[in-house]
Image 1 (spheres, rainbow, N blue to C red):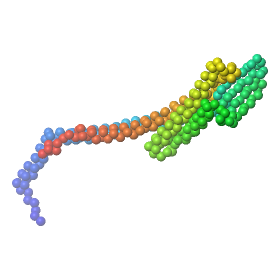
Image 2 (cartoon, rainbow, N blue to C red):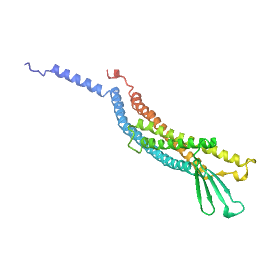
Image 3 (cartoon, rainbow, N blue to C red):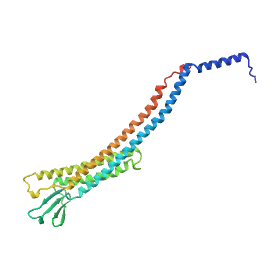
Image 4 (cartoon, rainbow, N blue to C red):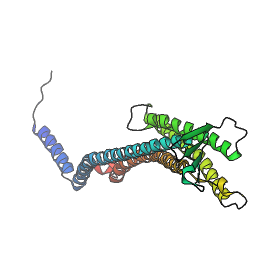
Length: 282
């Protein structure tokens, strides 16, 4: 092995190299580049946690608001399905009060989709089923069919929306639950449409017959409570379906808009601040 000899020439070379590195380190260009790098690292350290926290907080607030909205729509839909089933079974779609000359013989005639009932002033109550379908008017046949469809669609909507709601742990991932919620909303809307057609048509026939001068007074009827209950229930079902579909569309918009915002802020910001040239080190 050869020993290293500390000579004046070697000392001069080491001193010259040290002075050169010190000059480069304390030069304005190097100091400026170091300062910009430190500022950039400080900005990233402060901005990223704040931005990520804001994004998570906004998303959590939106999820909670959407879940509460879906729960409200579910309660409205339950009220609507109870009303639509009750209206379908009630016999008072038409009401005719015939008092006559004696209050003792007063009777109230009730006509529904499935039976006709008569209530006497003595307290007696009798009902007769409508067995013949072909003997019924067209609007009564249509009302039967559409009201049954409304009950079926509303029941399907309750089952499907229960699986797709955010407050339940059924239905799989978010995308699957979103599609399920949308399907439940469509069922509620169809139920509302199927219930609105017979109630509106039935009421139109009652009003037109009531103002027809050729029809005797004892054959004229007024809309009963079942018709009004059916109208209110169809409106509730329609509103519930719209809320479910709207909450599903909001969820799709969140899924589309949030990721681009995160990527854009994370990628473009360092590029704007990282505009220095490596040639300055030379």
